[in-house]
Image (cartoon, one colour):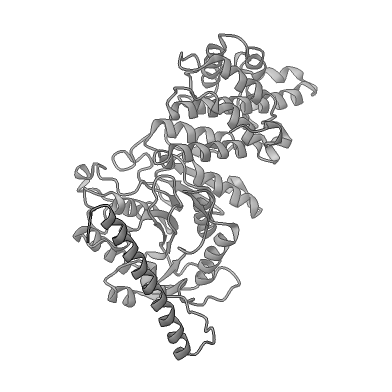
Length: 510
């Protein structure tokens, strides 16, 4: 579809041009090529802004001292990695090789980037003319100066690209990107202001980025939040490292990718907040190798489905007053398999499940099935909160959200506020008075949940929304409805007769 790029914003302009690079490249490879270029431009811009500051001081020679950059959380960029050289080489047939050398030099001079950057720009699969066009376009956008930082130009571009890639890659896209409105609702409910935050399957780092934004929006200090995570896919691990680096978020995602179950890179650690979107219903998670694992406090999860292994892993990682919010497929709410049922019952009896939120369908790129949010609170009698011992809040949000395209639904700010405010009213952490609302929210006691065989499906507890009385008397309404039904039946008989006549003419008599 032809579009006048002059009318488009930065994100669209970049996407439209970068899309020309795709050709025969694998989607994930192409994704890393584009995001790597944007990252390189940002790093170079931030370096040049700092360098110009230093050249105006009493000691301009400091402009060539790496420590003067690293102390300000700015990457040291050697001459062969500076964007000016990339820009001047855009039309050169060796542009790919020049970019690879730049990435290599950047990694060698910055320990935190070792093994993170894409270095396949010289690949014959990459059209060098189109690569040069993308370089030209990126050259026109300031990404690392103060104004760009304040308006989060790079963050916007990066998130837009991750979203577009996830959308285009469908199921595979869901492995590295959780839709923004889902992350936002988790963050608004958990409220990670201060402490240690962890994501055991962090994808491209969206949970951390939104937590960072949450702190900024509430005038908190970013340095009060420490970020920890793990990611099993090496390509996605690199995306997360870049995604956090461009925002200056210090992090510990381990020295490399890792399998959280088989190789917990944060063994023995406890966290104040956990946010996660584990892959749904994973069959081959190596559970047979972990039958004696200390994380299975509530029972050994089945080897054929990782859902309950994720639940127990997350609970095992929480501090005594820790809180977690995570996404799971709806099957986990009511599964009656022996092992999972026993684990769910034990967790409920230990009073750790604080809330369950049912989401509408079509919220995720990875699946069209509806899913739910689980909220764990290790201490339901924390200071500053209403004592909620023996209680669980159920919210049915299946009627919220709006379709943004044919296959995807998103929550609006108002939807997110409605759910989050209800949760905080239940916890006693906002000024609203909590009330059960038929069809939307209900506080259930452990006794009530036990009577429902420990099933956690919100619809079972919240019931149906009350229907407004339209004032029409019952007898009048029934006479009207039966009259309408009679007409429908007559129309149905008429159509049936016409179909029989047509078939008869064709020699097929019924």
